Image (cartoon, rainbow over all chains, first blue to last red; front, side, top):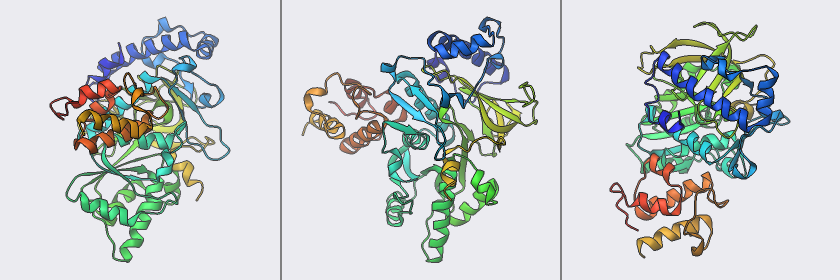
Length: 362
Length: 80
């Protein structure tokens, strides 16, 4: 099964059985591809006596810990085919993951993301406010996860403005002008959770006292990158929503979960507040004691699989996040597939996530 | 200015290259035409021709020649 075939299916239309069949077929192919093309990956699989021919379900495939991409340069294409190297967000002093992309994988990431996000925002492009500073995408040779996130979402922006300057100060005049110009239109806002709270929401509050308000009731906000710092400031998911609504009328807010090791396959939060797995990827919750699959409602370590990676062996990974499956195929929003919740980082896991690593400075 | 001149100029200005490099140029062939450069090129073309491209076409736009083909589509009607 090639990736184009998966791209042609509506991203949330497959039920449990259909999806298992599709994922098993594609992920077994990817496992074989990486065994053949990546020596390190092949060695790892040999060392656990893994036999791909015995695999009945994608759940039987081995998973690499995400940390391995920090320690090893894992790629399944020759150096000259690498067009982009992406790095994970990390706090100062932390090693970063390096993810090597060739043309095919890089383009499939973008295509996938468009399919997934369009299901929530519609396919038309909108005026877009990026709640970050422009310098994040300046270093083009090494792409940070933060830059990659912004750039990936930029395709939805018809006209774009960065709401913050390089000192992370809100560009009040720029915002006013932009919102005047596109008055009455649906506007896309994108940013990382903590930056939105610290540099956007708090500034809106301050401006309100000066009598300056922005009307973002026509806005759709997509945000991600981790809640850790906000939880420590006792800001819950519901409060985040409520406060932004009061501050600027923003009602359509979607969180997303994703990681640079599987860019493209993001998990978007639906109107009912659930993170959804699309046909392109899946989450499997593992019991920490023996890595067996946890039951519905039972928290455990999150494994993620993605149908995209061809240039690096990252199609099945064990994250350092804890989560729980809330249901399968029966979310009231109508989307099929698993929906789940993130409980947070595992104890002693390092801090990562574009929002959380930035927040360590505060 | 003809459409071809406008089209070429968008490439030359965005990527800071000369006209003789345009024919056969593909996405990722030169450093400047990376994913950031790509979005700048699209923004420039949209401005010059006063169009809004679909996300699918932005992704399919992977060479100098392919771009001409895409812009000639009925949705945009820009014959180059």
